[in-house]
Every structure is written in C-alpha cells, then in structure tokens.
Image (cartoon, rainbow over all chains, first blue to last red):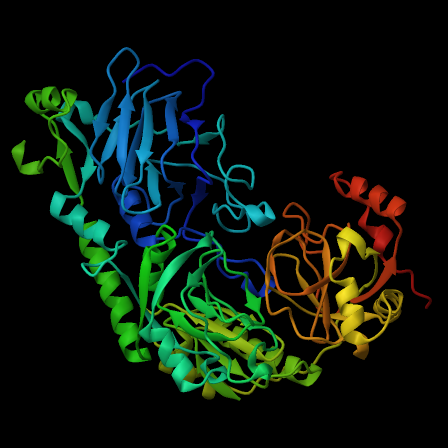
Length: 367
Length: 248
C-alpha cells in the first residue's frame, strides 16, 4: 500500500467532471410535506449494485455522472472504486500507459492513480461507488438537490477540485490474496445493464397505472396514452422528462387544471398544452396539472437514464400487477446482489490486463 | 372521501376538489390520525407507510410496496380509530413582504390586467390590499401557497408552463398567490419579484413561512428592491424587518 501523503486526508479528488455529476443516495424521505423533494438516485437498482461491488451499505451515496468526462484521483490513501453502467473506463497510474478497466467490478486505485469515465454507452448516466465514502447528511440525506442547495459537498453538483472524503479504516490487503475487488459475472452484468435499456423492439417499456386524475380525460384519450409510441424529449433533467409525440386532450376546459394535489416521481402530468411530463426523482411535492397515470417505481430508472430521442411505450397495468412487478424487480435485484463475487487476478491475467487483452470478469474459481 | 390510486407506492385520499378551509381541516385531521397510529406500536394495518403529504384537498399516503399494498393501506385508513384532535388555534406570524411589480420582474402583469379587465396599477393595488394566509407548503422547499387573493385576480394557470421561472418570482393562479423560492419550471402568472429569501437550509426552521402565517405584500420601487437584493445575498440578512408589527 502507498504511504499516505502527509497532510492529505484520504479521499477522491475530482480532477474533471462531465455535465451535472452529483452525489446521490436513496433520497431525502419524510419531508415532502414541507415541500422538500426526495431527490436521490435516478436508478436505485444500479446504485445498490454499485455499492455492493465495494462492500458499502446498498443505500450509501454514489456519484451519478452523465456521459463521459468524470475523472477521480486517489489522494491520501488507496481507494476501492466501482463503475456501474455501459461504460468505457480508463485507469492511469503515473508513469504507466493508461489501461481500460472492465465495468461491473471494483478496482483499487493506488495513491495518485486516476480513473476516468470516458463514455456511458447505452445510457446517458453511469454510477461510481467508493468504498467507505463518508459524507455529512443535510436534512437526513447526502443526496444533492442543487435547486435548494441541499446535500452533496456544498449543495451543488460536483466540480473540479472537490474532494470526496473516505473513511480511514485501511483497505483489506487484497494484494496478498490476489483479489482485486468484487464483480458480477458477464452474464449478470448483461442482465443488470438490460434493466435500464430498451428491449429487442428498441422501445423502453414502462408499466403505468391510470390515476389519480384519469377522470379528467375521456377513455379514448386515456387509451391513446397506452397505444402511442412516445419519445424522451430534449427537455429532461432530474425533475422530469417531457414525452414527445401527440397531445392528450383534457375532457373539457375545466379539467385542464386541478387544485394542487400530491405529485410523486412517476406521476404523468398533462398541462394545458396536452404534452405529457413524467416526473422523476427531483419531482416537486405538489402540482396543479391533472395526472393521467403513474409509472411504476421499478420502471423509472430506465427512462431516467435514457437519452433524448429514446422511444418508449407505456403499458397499462392494475394495482395487483403493479405490486407483482415491483416485487419481481426487487427479487431480481436481490439475486444480482447475492451473485456479487470476488474477482482475482493471477500474474498471467495481470499481464494480459496490462496489454488490454482481457475485458471480462475473471471468475473466482480460477484462483 | 374517495381513495384514488397513485402508482405502486401511494394512494390519494381525496376530500374534495376545491380550495376550502373546511377541506384543509379534514385533510389535517386524517393526517393527525395516521401520525397517531404510526406513533403507537404496533402500527397494525399501517405497517409499511413511509410518509404522508397533505394538500388543500387530499392526503397522499406513501408506502413501501415490498411491505404492504394499496388495498391494505386503504383498509387500514377506513378503520382508523377516531382522533380526538380538534382544530387547535395555532400561533402565527404576520409578514410584510416587498415586491417589485411588472417589467422584467413581472412579465405577465399586463396579461393578467387584460384578463381581469383592469389596469396593471389596479392589479398591484388588489394584490397589496388583500392580506393572504399560508394554506400549506409544497411543490419545492419554501414554496408557500397563499390565499385567497382578491376575486378579480382569480385566473387559471398558464396553458404553457414556463421551463424556467426565476427565483423570487411572484405568481398568481386560481385563488392563490406564491413566491417561487428557487428557479424552477412553473405555470403561474408572474406579476413581480420579491427579494426575501424563503428557504435557507442552514436556518432553523429552514422555511420562512409556515401554514397559518398571514402575509401582506408591499409594492417597492427599483432602488429599494436593488438594496434588498443586495442584502439578501448576505448570510445574515435580518428577516425580522419583514415581520409586521401588530397592535395589541
């Protein structure tokens, strides 16, 4: 292990950041009544997997980064880091050639090493977890809600020069056991990636229940919500995404707005112009446009991570099917978390890795 | 009282669809019943309930769908023990909040005047002459729904919501008025700007306004507005300057 630099607390320094990279944990619950949104990760399933790969609690904070551009440097001490997503990730050790790191497993960054997320592949977002990340809570959560300067390091998205502190308990001596970290097998990694990606039809499928204000629309208009193909609009952020396509007409002019009623991530609002807005993690707590339907919580990750232009379909379901689906998604995630396993390296594989010939996960049984 | 679905992790208990203090009281009552039940052990049918969100006319009940179901929560609500909570008189404060009206700060002032068939000056007069009270906090941190405004100022939301409403914008919609504490999307008609910081995470409580508070708006000119904007950028802005001194 490298000697800690005198005076430098262990942590990861942000050398460069792509657009809007931010710290997110599960969210800021219990304060919607005060107008404080949940915020929190856009895709809790990936956050859980990322944390499992560095032996953190599954709801610990992670970095959400959009597209490529995020570079982290280990300062003060070595760090263990995992990147989750369809990413291209590069590790640079001072004095050595850059090498590509396989995704869906954790890696050790020695003092002075830098890790760069070059691109995020099939989704617009990737997640970076850091073993023993140590962040203060603001209003019960570390999640960044930049609009009100809550969470994160200083209530804002990450910027170059920021340092994310990590705990001071030493890393396990992975080197002695030739264990480099924890990973998913390539089959499990494919399954985890598919959770956030369009299916073979090229469309995201989002299950949604009509309501709470489906009565503000005729049956034909409600049906058209589920019959049309929509496209993720260019106006998309952590708060919501416009669904481009046709417009949905309200039953009559008096149905175009309601006395403000609760909104949750997943609510599909139809404002007066008839263009649906699907609310995401930073959704405000109440709103005055009728909500024709609500997307299931287990299906919000994929649309939250989708790039503008991605086609999607809404699939109607009832409350029984909704509960079945959300519980099945939780079981699938439990299985993937349980399948996280040690990744070992041998002198041979080290040499191969150094020459960039191996990209996949090395199975524990090889050791 | 109607129970409506709101996805896999919430139900909405709806008492009506208007802005009416009687409905607000019914919502508050159910909210209190649920808080009492959750505070006692065991939670019974409310197991898995995570939080409630009171609004003018409804109460959203958010739950963990891995622990409970919409039907189980709805059944539990129907069989809650009666609460002895009566409407208590709460302490409230009276605020006097400065607003600069029209121009770049209130891009919809002219349109509101036209819709109400009065002059922009009359819109300002009616907004400043009618004290309002805070119905509830919601939408975003520090956002207070205040009403009721002068009847001539009642109008529906914009059909085309703005993608970006500047922080501090003073808006009108329905029978209500509000100040946007943060830049955000928004569908209210913007008639002015107030420099008063409504939410500061480092302040206790973080939100300036609380349900029940009374608010009167005061028209200010550019000089005073600029001065207040400069003050608001200082961490130690004296907020007591906005408290109205009442005669006992």
